[in-house]
Length: 221
Image 1 (cartoon, one colour):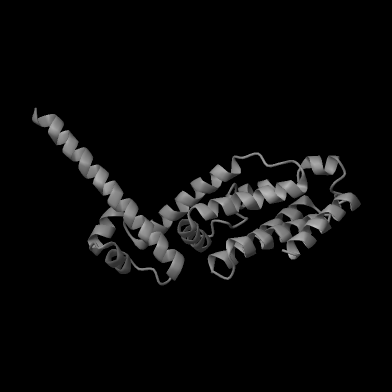
Image 2 (spheres, rainbow, N blue to C red):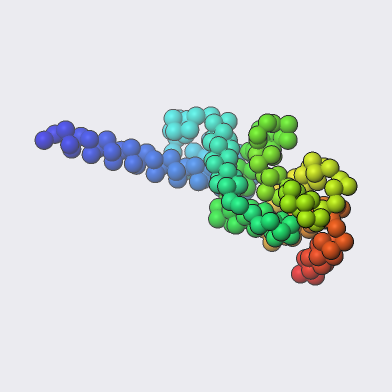
C-alpha cells in the first residue's frame, strides 16, 4: 500500500519542481527582455524569484545555460512558423512572412525579446551557418521560381542578392524592436516596406506598380 503513495509523492515533487522552474524561467525572460543580457545576473534572478542562487544553478546551471535554453526554444518556435506554406503572390507572400513573425512576437513578448537578444549573441542568424535560421527565414520571403516563370520578376538581379537584402530588412527591424526603439506595428511597417522595396528592384512594370501602391499605402498609415 505504501508504494503507490510514494510514487504519487514523487510525481507531486516533480510537478512542483517543473512549475517552479517554469516560473523562474519566465522571470529570467522578463529580466533579460527589460534589462538586457549584459545586466542580467543569476543573483538578481534568484532575488526576483525568491529563491537562493544555488537553487537557480540546480534548476538551470549557469547564465550561459539559460541563454542556450532560450535559443533552443526560439529555434523550435521559429521552425513552427516556417512549416506554413506562404501565398504565391509576392505581395501577399511578404505580408504573410512579416505577419507570421508579428503574431508570434505578440504571443510572448518577453520570450521573443530575450531569445532574440540571446540568438544575436550566439550568432544564430549568421548567414554562413549551413541550414541555420537565416536560411530558413529567407525561404519564406525569398523569390520563388513561379515569380520568374510568370514574368513578375525580371531576373536582372540575382535571387541570392534579393534574399540577402530581405534578410537585412528583417534583421534591422528586429534589432530595433528588441532594443525598444519601435513597437510591433512599426516593426511590421518597417520590415514590410523594406521587403517590398527589395522586390521592386527586380519587378516587372505591372508588379512594380502594385508594389509602389502598397509602399505608399504603408507610408500613409
